[in-house]
Length: 278
Ligand code: DGL
Figure 1 (spheres, protein in one colour):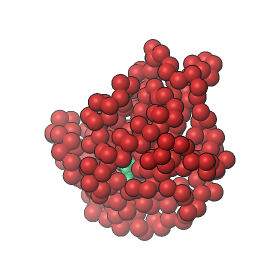
Figure 2 (cartoon, rainbow, N blue to C red):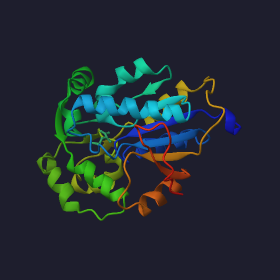
Figure 3 (cartoon, protein in one colour):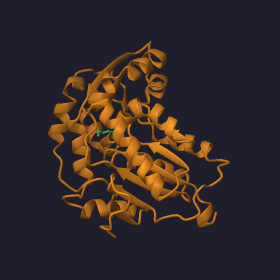
């Protein structure tokens, strides 16, 4: 596949969580052209109003589409996916892939029929989630924890700050004494980044399930016969919407994941800011 025939895929999240999804897709489709944008100016999305999330997600995706025609967008954020997909699909004619908490696979894998959903505060309270549980897990007892703290801890970890296991333990304390809880859905894309720490706090859980691999398969099938839109591709890069306080660890990480640089995206400007960090 030469550079001009590579489909361009944009990943969008409030923070670094979507990198857990990107890694799965990149592993399955190593030759595609990837852009990643995280809206750190409005992070965390967990408890933000729905209208704010919809407005920013649409604006940011449209802004990036102006810089580089896209072939597919992955909303690598469960919280945003619960509210933005219909609006995005109205404004874009390319495929939009959302991230849905893996309730169905968890209900298929549990032996005890007692499962946990770990997501953001926004995701756990949305009707979308109750419908998903009614549809796929009505025969299970489903425990829910909505946590903004865990999102922040995952973000800290990837930005190179130390994190305290006791803080994670405290967030999960209500599940400590549920011995038959055997499957936990990581229903926020930040949480696979804390999987080993979460595992240490919940030793009784046999299955931790996220949506990354299923999204990768979906992207592959949607792009099978795509006619690539962009002839003039920009570098494979990561955009943020606010300058970072500490960027060395994140820069090292994104380079190791195959991105060439980090750029600041001014969502209100017509011109891409020239504050690119190599
Ligand atoms: N990573 C996001 C999700 O999957 C949201 C995290 C946040 O900003 O609250 O829900």
